[in-house]
Image (cartoon, rainbow, N blue to C red; front, side, top):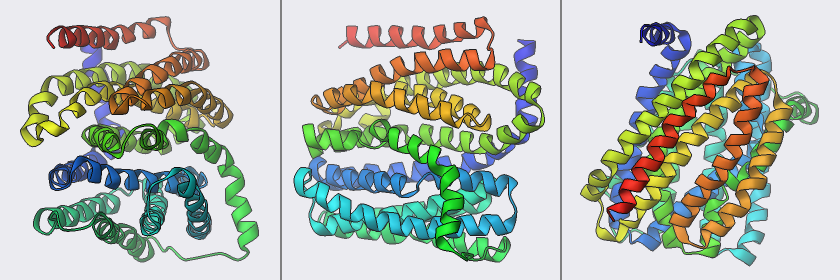
Length: 444
């Protein structure tokens, strides 16, 4: 117990924890505001219309991931370690390439929708517009994360979420069409990159700098290729599930599955913030003192798994009464989806932590191989699961990712020479999972 207490004190005093804590308060607050907004939206719109809105959101995120071209990670690295002129050039390239990429993807998506989709032309335009907003927001936020200047990103996230919640609470009604509703959503959240850009220009001397686009693009794109490949290979697991669900099931099931993701999004956001905060620090520590780096990993990973399992257990105990307090019976099927999805979020968090460690160690090729393996394992499982609606998809996520994580954990342990006793930490989540589900299904 004394050793655990000392470890916690060390972590709390560390700069990594301070950065994480700062981002945590702001971004979890943002996620909670957005969750409240989603609850109201789900009440105003029927499940099918809510599903259309959710599907459009998911498609925008899909396009934004591809249009990023893997440059986001390069921006974080450059902001953490590079000079201002290089950062200015890379961010300028990311801006132009993002616009070109989104324009190209708009054309591709029109063709895709013609054969496989059910959206109208204006909805595809809206999807592409929000993708542009997301792309530029992510690029700008990467700079702040790399510089470890978290306040502007936190404040803009909170402000835009408050504006959005005000609109949903005071203006939204059943007479507003989905298209107009989504357009207002885009306009509100476009404020974020605008504010971040102004601050970057005023406080951090950002200037738009491109001398030769072809050569400058090549200089940033070549090191970003592994990360682009990683993103593309990860698409089935991270972004294409809603497409599978829309094609093999219904928009209503898309809405159910997306609603479950909204409930787990605060957890996902916490993990994303944590790993974004960890990456620059891990990268520096790996370069400066590899022995200390290894010792921190030895101590931190088991704590993360134990604490994550504890949070999952709390979530499972409180989700039923909380969900039923806010939603009508037509959404109750979301509960079962949630109870499997939260375990996937936990496993994904462990895999993301491992990925952050590998990235800091410059193991880009290994990351790519792991992403290929994950895609090969999980894609057919998700496709089959999507035939059984949101619940089948959530079970597919859990089964497929469990198989992948077993392999990744073995590689990770071998690469960092983890002590054998570290493996025993997995007994706790396994025990909690089987005890809870045995009790739950017995009492159905």
